[in-house]
Length: 151
Image (tube, rainbow, N blue to C red; front, side):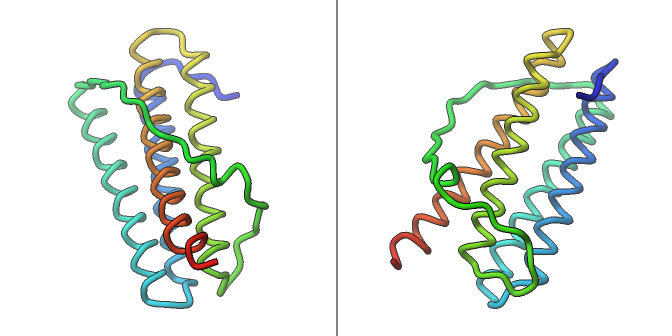
């Protein structure tokens, strides 16, 4: 696992992760079959870009506050089979892929928080884990509303 020497190292890592998420959701939007799907994934890409901007601002200003919140986990992603990204994938498969990606990001940040060498670094990782947990919940709700209820 990566070693972080400073908060700036943590923030650079997180900023890169947010850019990867922007690229991921833009790719899903580009490969979407319908305009509705495209809109959902474009909005997620924009949200990830906002996170990247916020992290960049935190890095530039050196000001950071963490407010711990409990995020509900519907665990829908825990009971779905893994899918691979492909052009023209179904909305259901795209949501599954997104849930699993957000869960993996949550686990990464949570593990990094446990290994952090100071409280400030730990709080940054816990905040990032919390954000990923929110994203996963949004995809689970979307999955519940548009996939499970239709079946």
